[in-house]
Image 1 (cartoon, rainbow, N blue to C red):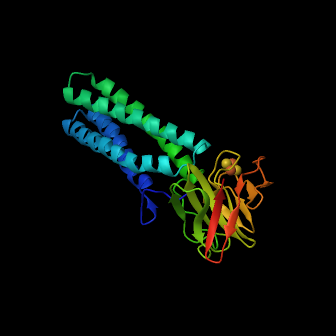
Image 2 (image 1 turned 45 degrees about the horizontal axis):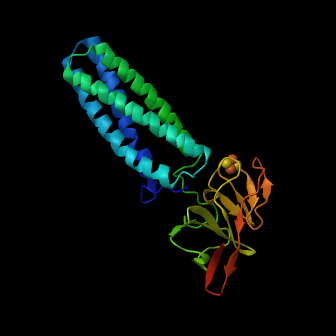
Image 3 (image 1 turned 180 degrees about the vertical axis):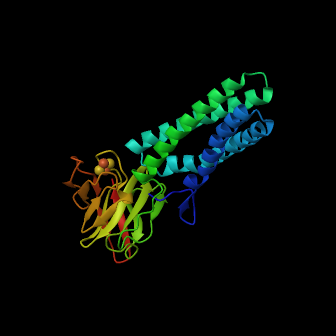
Length: 262
Ligand code: FES
């Protein structure tokens, strides 16, 4: 699914995390060098790297939180993974901040500071691993463009009931989808060779976003493990999912497409 915190379509979180990773690992390296060669300028470099690393970690957290809230599908395995990723990173930043504080007070054993930084780098690596899984397996922030899919389409609709205008009749091409956020639900409106259809944006296997998958010939494929569903009936075409998705009635007029919510 396309990132909400992006610059010209490029997700900002993966770009920004490179800085704290480099700076905080650099902190540990320069402190170890300072210890080995007993040179103050290595310690000074480590201190500045630590300040920059903590600052950039906080900055990188902003687009990360935005994508966690608005992009990772709710009630999914990726939501849990995203929460773990965030908590580990918060702990890591606290550990490096304590190390920085002790360094500036100057009354703690330097081995304690190095120990904290080693723990911080271990947590940083685990969080980075989980972040990689969120991108490379769960495709968070990935803007998928299969043939005829067109550009990513998403709309928030407030306070609507009954027949809700969700698209103009020619807004979507055949095989294109649009994600609608309405009344706390995520519903995908799509166009197939048979006309428009609407279904829940929630794969019944592990909660993958079907809007982030691919659709062809009236069948949508989940991007996480490949389950397929008929978009008109909601029935499972291929597993691992074994439960149908919910579908919603739609009405087409010569100008508009309506989603019917009871
Ligand atoms: S979440 Fe596993 S196939 Fe959709």
